[in-house]
Image 1 (cartoon, rainbow, N blue to C red):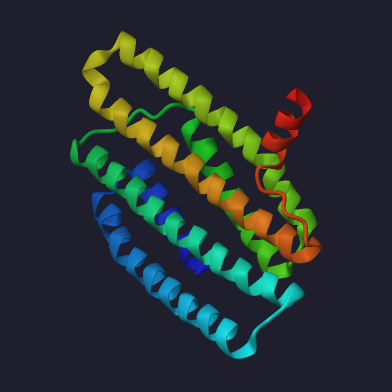
Image 2: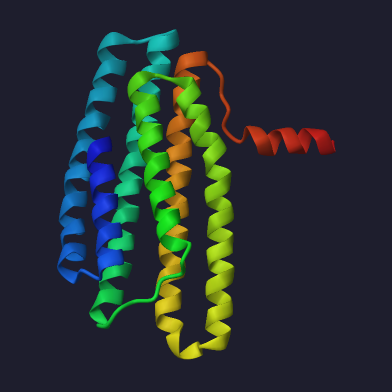
Length: 209
């Protein structure tokens, strides 16, 4: 399922960068296979809980598998959204001028997803922490690109439709990174029995109080 998510995201981003309308159209079909696997994993998790009654580390692993599958299913949905934007951009014809930071952001998001999946397959909390560290940089890139696009929109309002699609793509890429972060947090929970969800926000709140 993780491999399919990597593949579908790559396909959607290639459809965007190459302006390939036909490639964009194939992404929705690929997403159906991810949905099918999500249902199979749900069934497997329920069966494990009912028949094996796992406890402690085993229970954490079973629940983490369910959580990770949910995040991956959403990555498939996001790739489909990116492909829809890519298809609309390609359908307008002509070369698209993308913000210079968009393709680097795309590569960074693909990398963080791969890193998260590697950390899960190896139950490696150190790799998982790398994912958490890299997510902040992706958030910053998102903000920078959106600001640049809004400036361009003010200068050239005739390009509003393309600018809106680019903003949607950037927002969707940031969401992929968020789901990769969720996967990494599950790895740390499984490996160390430590819940690090919202850790930075909660720490900041505690400091204020």
